[in-house]
Amino acid sequence: MSSRGCVAALFLAFACIAGATELLQPSSEHFIVSVAQLQAGSRAQFDAWAAHNNKEYSSAEEAERRLAVWTANVQRQASKLAAADANGAAAEVSVNGLADVSLEEFKAGYLGQVSRRNVEALEAGKKKDHRYRYENIVPPAEVDWRTKDIVGPIKNQHVGGSPCGCCWAFATIGVTECIVAMATGKPISLSEQQLIDCDKAAPWYDLGCEGGDFEGGVDYIIDNGGIDTEKEYPYLAHDDKCIRDKEGLAPKASTLDGFGHVPVQNETALAQAVSQHPVAVAVCCGDHIDNWHAYTSGIFKIPGTDIPGGCTDPLDHAVVVVGYGTTKEGEDFWIIKNSWGETWGEKGFFRVPRNVGAPLAAFGLASQPGYPIKKGVNSNADPIRTDIWQEVPRSPTAGTTATS
Image: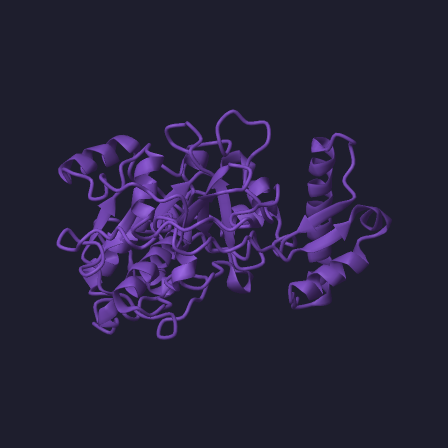
């Protein structure tokens, strides 16, 4: 599968306007590798890392292959840290749970957004919608939907080691889970596999594990009258025959009524939307896939690049924005839910710079943000909530961050 696909799923679940509840603290429990011990031999540290991440391999040969991949990845990471360090050395390296995955495997199995709409097309579609629903909202200082118990569990599109470029499906489901939970008052886990197997008809023709677009995923859920739960239609990490398409087995709570576009090239508009509910977005991983692969914590940046995030095109990964905030040092950031498991990033989430002064924002995330519409939550007939994130005094530790 190509690296095209993940971007659309980035329907960034941009969390609602911040305030009433302080931001969840960034959490990173990654294994720390001693560079000196690594140079002396990597087996002991690899075994300890594997135990830390509950890794099991099918054979001794597979374990040896993963050891070689892990060693190369960690050594490359240590070299990058040393090059960036004023003293020219790095004593320790924080290593996430994907370190035994090669860059080639990562490109093939962890992306999958195929953005079929460019900025001009999105602008044309936006004009048909007339007014932007949230244009008069004053975004609060901080938003974190994870504190409201509507953000579904962190999932892993690479379960079982199978390459499946279906970030678009995970972004579609991730943002839909939030909207459905807002309607019902209860969190829910919905099926990515149903999208992968069944969302292949006109007009969107999403491609399962070969990529897709989150707007097409939402269209499928609308046309299908909802989507099944994860328990009813579990994830397989590969394309399979559709077994639920049009059979009416989806829970009625998962029905959707439309798709809303956020004005492109506008981080304020994105914050306005995220203050009301999470938002899906597409991002650009581009030539900096190694940095994505190795990310553990902090506000994610690509060193030495002029464009925030290093690229804005092509959009090849999809995610959900579930909030935003500001560090105690005054740096603004977005909070984003990913689909690479809890051993990557900040327990499956990551943060990127916000209000960067570039039209498409960091990693191009302001290129095509959007969200599902559901009656009772965010349809034109529903009131816009202004009391979700009542401003409260900031905790001295809220929004603190480590450097990445």
